[in-house]
Image 1 (spheres, rainbow over the protein chains, first blue to last red):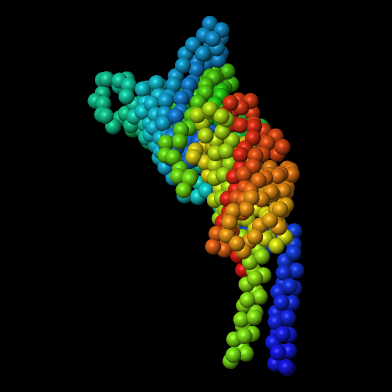
Image 2 (cartoon, chains in turn orange, yellow):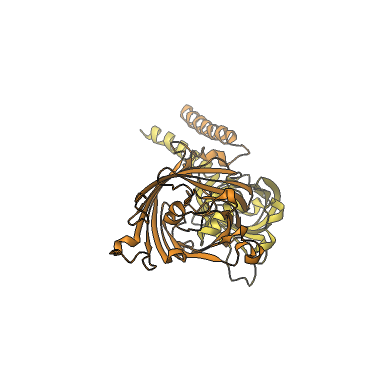
Length: 302
Length: 186
């Protein structure tokens, strides 16, 4: 009898124990029963709408498996007046294709009408800005590029080498998206021209660029980029390129409309060969049109 | 020895019953489709890390999902979804808290497919709205699967669809939930 009493009381206490725990679980938030999720390290995205600020590379990358078809136009000087439709009568262009390979690796190439120049680059980010514990506050990206001038040699009195057509540029981009509104970056850049026009010019030219944006609506932003040359700026001949513009995103396309004193559409051209100046109103209207295509489909339904 | 076994058995049995009251998953699936009929461009995505908890005794059902976990065919679409439409940085999560109104009709111990009505509140993009959905609970060999299918109006959640893309992005999204649950061990 005592034994049975012992067992029944044991069973009862067991049930009671479970009832108590079950009662304790009666909370409104069932999901909290699963425990708190640790805040994940998350990459900061959309610092810029495009992989270029205006002229220069931005800290953004193309998503893996996408291709960006870019059509760039730089028109004539606005101060040419109405007879030239404020510069729209003349246009210089670059057509290019960029490819996203990894989230932090992309390549691209293009051809500009100016000097009939081909250019290609590879861009890689060893560090990317992220949120969460142990994350890095900046994106650091490195760009290496090459340009190849295919127009006839200007000076035929000297022996011209094929390598003289080539120039290189190397750039580091250190950028941060400070908020949804403001992103800023600095871009120390080195350009090496295998052949320079004048004896007095140096083949290596160093500059520091700054770029930024102010996003003022969901799909629009002000953008600016400027390169300050540390070496090789010839007084009265070449100037530092400054470009200000607006990014407009329309779903499939990004339009970058801007005014700039440069015509060049690769790093060599706009950093070392900008011959116009803002203070004389020698500015040009221009646009970059970017259309991104998904060329490698993600496997989503599995 | 026998006594000890009995004690263990009693506890084991009673605890196992209570544990099965709560069913959960962290790998549930939600798909959404906002494709305009006849539009060649599919606007759809899937999220395969839906957190879902079902209290079979009370008929309470909740799920939560990270907006950034929605996968699209196209990277650009995913970027726009997060940046321009649902604003994932500001509103990282969507969640649903509701009850199965005809929970008594579901026999969780017997295999079968039970149609259910789910009522509750869906919070997304910082807005909370009442939602009613038809769903079904499937029980097969003791495993519970919860599925539901409903439509939400983007306007209800203050998700703005600009005129420019109105011919591509529908004003409503068809949402499908599919969660295979397992007992929650505490």
